[in-house]
Amino acid sequence: MAFRAGLRPLTATAGASDTFGLGCAPIGNLYHPVAESDAEETVAAALARGIRFFDTAPHYGAGASEARLGRTLAGVDRDTVAIATKVGRRIVDADGAAVPTGRIGVDTVGDLTRDGVLRSVEGSLERLGTDRIDLLHLHDPLDVDEALAHAMPALVDLRAQGIVRAIGVGMVWPEPLTRFVREADVDVVMIAGRTTLLDHRGETELLPEAALRGVGVIAAGVFNSGILADPVGAPFFDYREATPGLRNRARRLAAVCDARGVPLRHVAARYPQRLPAVEAVVVGARTAAEVDDFADAESAVIPDDLWAELEDAAEALEVGRG
Image (cartoon, rainbow, N blue to C red; front, side, top):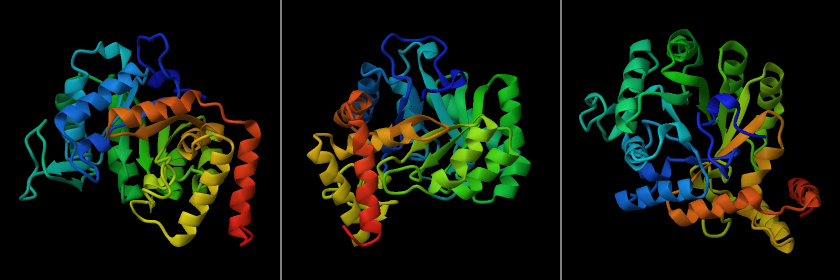
C-alpha cells in the first residue's frame, strides 16, 4: 500500500512516508480557531516527520486552510511535496457574495458548474502559491448527475492541460462515490469515515468496485470525528455526540488495544491499510503533537492477531454478548 505514482512528489525525499498524508481541515479552524503560528507549526511538524502529501480544500475555513498551507510551504521545494485540494464549493463573504480570486471568506456554497470549477482552481492556486495541483477532488457534490455532467468534464480537461496531475472525488457516503468510480474517469477517490474500525460501509461495494476498475482509494476520517482517537475525552461520531452504543463499542475496542499495549488511535489509523484498493490514509491534525502521534502510528508494531481480537470484540457487541 502506497500513494500511486501520480500522487507522489516529483522529487523523492529520503525517509518520507509513502502511506500517510496530513489532512488540513483542522488548521482551517475546524471546530475551534487555530492561531496562525500553530497552523504553521503543524505543517512544519508534518514535514519534519516525513509527511509529503497535504490535503486541503477551499471549504476548510473558507480558504484559510489553503492560505496557511501555502504560506508554510512557500520555502519548500515544490517538487518535494504533493498538494491535494478540492472544487465544488464557492467561497463567499458575509453577504453571500463571491470573494475576489484568491481571497478568504466566511463561508462556502455549492457550485458544480464548469465556470465554478475553473474559478475555484484559480483561487486555490493563488492561496496555495503554486502553479499546479497534484490531486484535485470534487468535494461532496450533492447532485451526482449534475456533477457528472458539468463538473467532472472540467476536471478531466484540467488534468489534460497539466494544471492537475490527478483527479478524484471526496465524499462521506460510499453509494454515490461508487457511481463516480463507475461513471467518471477518476484516478482516485477519498472516502471519509466509512472504512474505519466502527464503520465498514465503504467496504461492501465501493472498495471492490475501485479495485476492479483500478481506481485508488484514500481513506480519511479514520477516527470518525474523534471517538476512535479518544473514546472518553472526544466521544464524537460523524461530527456529533456519539450514541451510548457507539461509545460502548469504542471503549471495548480501546480496552482490547490497551491490553496489547497499542493505543486505539494508532490501530484506527492503520486499519484502512489492510483493505483492498486503499492506497493511503489522510489524518487531520491541528497541533504538532497530534502530527507526531499519528506519524508514530505508521511504524507502531501491531500484532497480527490483534485484528482478529478486535473483530471478535465488535461482533460480540453487535449481537449483545459484550
